[in-house]
Length: 558
Ligand SMILES: CCCCC/C=C\C/C=C\C/C=C\CCC(=O)SCCNC(=O)CCNC(=O)[C@H](O)C(C)(C)COP(=O)(O)OP(=O)(O)OC[C@H]1O[C@@H](n2cnc3c(N)ncnc32)[C@H](O)[C@@H]1OP(=O)(O)O
Ligand SMILES: Cc1cc2nc3c(=O)[nH]c(=O)nc-3n(C[C@H](O)[C@H](O)[C@H](O)COP(=O)(O)OP(=O)(O)OC[C@H]3O[C@@H](n4cnc5c(N)ncnc54)[C@H](O)[C@@H]3O)c2cc1C
Image (tube, rainbow, N blue to C red; front, side, top):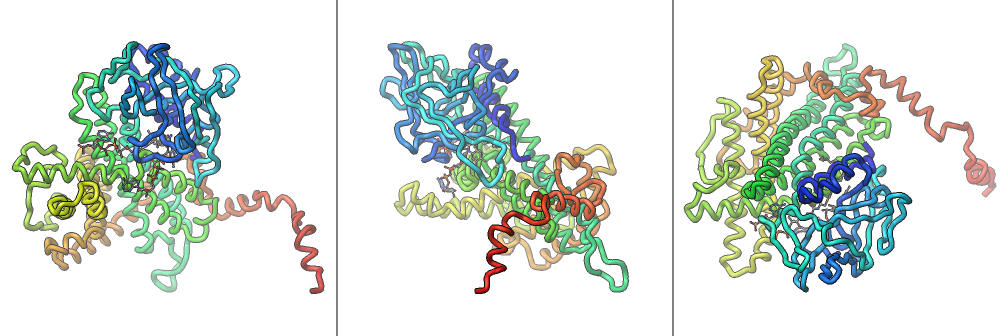
């Protein structure tokens, strides 16, 4: 859980080689990387810039006389900063640098760069490398810094699957300007399942513990109740169980789309790139944010013991919440999706709704009302309505500002909070749709019934959570919202008997969970006492600090 120094080798280094190195280059590098003869990381972010890649300062200048690239970090803000596994573990890196050929700045490109000697592991001349220090979490990963002092690498170390520099300095452009960003798109497309997994771990701990913990009464005179029987506890935990399933289903779809994209790009078809970029930008942001919130609620649902490291939920939170920042800061990524949504609105306004992709076609179709009692399909129409409403509102705001003479960037900035709201609603619609489709495909009727309950819980919870938008224009009435509330409470109670099975079905072992509270055998109290006794502070009855600090104070007559 605390991370692994080689995580980025598998998560980004190898995928970057697969997607961006030519077949010929990969004959040299890929097998070695897969056998871990060389260990690598993905070095893109710098001390001064992470989000705005066009302003990366590390340069790779082509020297035609030696057929080499000269890597250089001209100032302190140009140092690579953050890459996982860079500090101490990696001897190679995929380095993203601004490529300069014949004095022309050609933007960020990826290079395979050796950092350390393969035998001694010592850093090579011209390289400054080290660890950036402790973080909120992930402290088993050596996130690092890296500087280059006119460090030379062969021309052939530019990853050349999609773009090339010939020996004479002729540049062959890629088929899509952002194709070098593919390693990021890959991780974003995997993040929904990854984050769903973090959320699932925290929920397994909290739900199991909530069946062991007894506190207070629902009906007087009986045994104290398991805290999971409180409606508030169910409301805290069960919608997140539904989300963990929903994120996993959505993630399977984006992983499949990324694999499809890779195949299509190899045949020269880059049409899926914009769609997948928009989709994964939004999904990554919504999923990481909701996961962090869900984990924190799971921790609080364990009361005081949730605050102890024995619960292990704080560590899960620390790792998961990193996802809100890495692979694109959430606001920045929501604004990427918003670009796509605004473009879609512009297409509709230009009478070109036929050209809209399937995920945004609903933006052109108005619905007057819904009959929620007819079931989940009607909820989908309601989600479409609120997303459409907010997308149009935010887009119109932006377009109006543009028309009034504001510069594009200024108009964008003045509309950006509204735009991020639109992106979230659009993404939540996508999550609900994929959840619905995935449940429909389940063959086992008993499993399907339980997952359908979770789906119902999810759509009622979500609609209630975004109710302001639907009430604003009178799309939903207050009596419809009462219906949604009743349905929500109905499904909380219906899910209660299956709650433990729903979390157990994720099959985390005790070793994976590392939680005293979330143990499979439920022996929480005995093990909490044993855990506390094992605390380093309990190794001796009287600590040395007593002699040194407490006694002089306690014995003073002041
Ligand atoms: C696999 C399992 C995962 C689970 C993880 C578990 C453990 C791992 C542990 C640790 C962490 C793992 C990884 C972390 C690694 C990293 O963090 S690597 C660094 C990540 N950095 C970022 O994500 C940077 C974010 N910034 C950007 O991506 C870009 O700068 C930007 C915001 C997208 C803007 O780029 P820019 O070049 O300026 O473009 P501009 O805004 O001008 O847009 C121009 C058009 O290009 C389109 N576009 C942008 N990106 C893409 C893309 N990737 N694909 C397709 N198209 C793209 C954009 O939409 C614009 O299109 P228009 O049509 O003009 O609107
Ligand atoms: C755990 C972890 C692992 C990482 N691993 C790697 C790695 O392996 N390799 C690597 O290269 N990098 C890695 N990173 C770096 C990470 O990708 C960046 O930190 C991330 O992309 C955010 O960039 P930033 O730090 O520059 O944030 P900033 O962009 O400085 O963000 C600061 C604030 O500014 C806002 N902001 C920035 N730009 C805009 C805008 N255009 N519009 C509106 N608001 C804006 C943001 O929303 C945020 O609120 C890692 C980071 C973490 C935390």
